[in-house]
Structure formats: structure tokens, C-alpha cells
Length: 136
Image 1 (cartoon, rainbow, N blue to C red):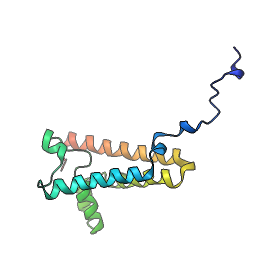
Image 2: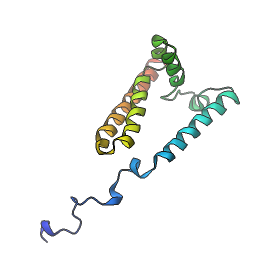
Image 3: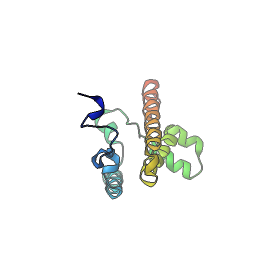
């Protein structure tokens, strides 16, 4: 069989070849974000707050302290923001990259790469915080 006559030519772009993030509409991602925010508010105001992972396992999650860090950033306390979670700039960047995938879809590989690097940075900071015992 000749390579040029293959029936599964990979150079032809099919409609179903869109990345997973593009298959899920933006309204669905927004609904997921609203549900997570609602869960956070219910846990905070009804059950007294705290991290669900930390409360059940004793291990803080990578996002522990992220809300406090962003609050400190908004109020101008940059030093305290880094104290609560030094990965908050990476989380903000990951969120921006995530929305850029939908706003500028022709450059989604760049945005997805940026989002991946930001999430990897969050995990690295989390592992370092766990190893050094500096998790808040």
C-alpha cells in the first residue's frame, strides 16, 4: 500500500478533531465556575469555612490560601498575598490563558501552553510548600 493513498490522511482537519476545551461551550465553563463559587460560599458561611481536602485528609490543596491571597492583592497587601499562597500570580495567569483560548481560538496552542505552564507552577509551589511545611 502506498503511503500517499492512505485513507486516514492526517493533514485533513475533521470537525470532531477540536480539542476538548473547544468542545465544551463557554457557558458550561461559566456554570462550572459558578457552582464552585457557590460551593465555596456555602462551605464558608454554612459550615464554618476551611478547605475540604485539608479538613478530610489533613493535607492542604494547591489552592489553599488562594482566596486570601487575591483578597490581599486587591487590598494592596502584596507581601501578605505571597504569604498565603505564593502561586497566586500563576493562578491568575492560568485563568487569563483559559479565557484567551475562547477569545482568540486561532492561537489556542499558545494559550493552552501558557495555561499548562501556569498550572505546573502551581503544583511545583504546592509540593515545595508541603516539603518545607510552609503551607498555610
